[in-house]
Image 1 (tube, rainbow, N blue to C red):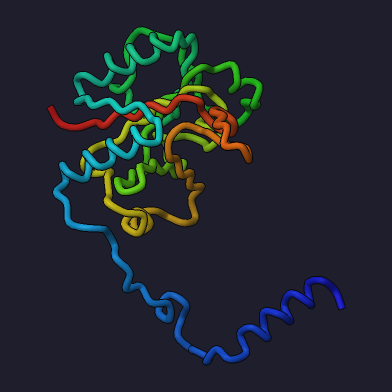
Image 2: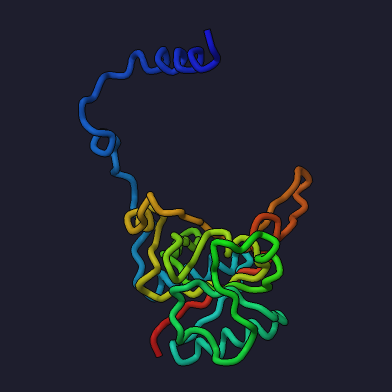
Length: 215
């Protein structure tokens, strides 16, 4: 008997007393859990997102459409970025006219090529207020997953309030599970058994989130 057969045999024995249900999985599994915790206005939800992002050590900024290019120019200058990676579908009005040389998201780019780029600017698919999480799905304004994992500095623009939801269940309703989803809660970090925190291990060391609202 192979290891596979042993594992499947144990699964069958564990499920032996479970009554058969002809309904599809989506109908058979109860979905009566809370969709969000409490009731908040749109402004309160955005404020909660900002609070939880900061709690995860992301740097949070607020701007309107007119202020955004100047803000991004300042953030890149403060980092001393000489090159910035730009996804193909990033709105042209978001980027400053001057500033670092723009590097485009190309399939031929190697990890070594991306590692020479100091910063990346993207949009997002959705942001979760209760967990302080930004979700990317590979849309044209976000580019390939790897461009947000290799550069050391990520500037992510979130349109508020339309891209902000209260909870993870609400985010899942908006997302396509067939797309390459990347869930980001603060800058990349890990801790060893002694809880020594190390940042920049498997993603950007610095995450800056711009909450883009109206004037």
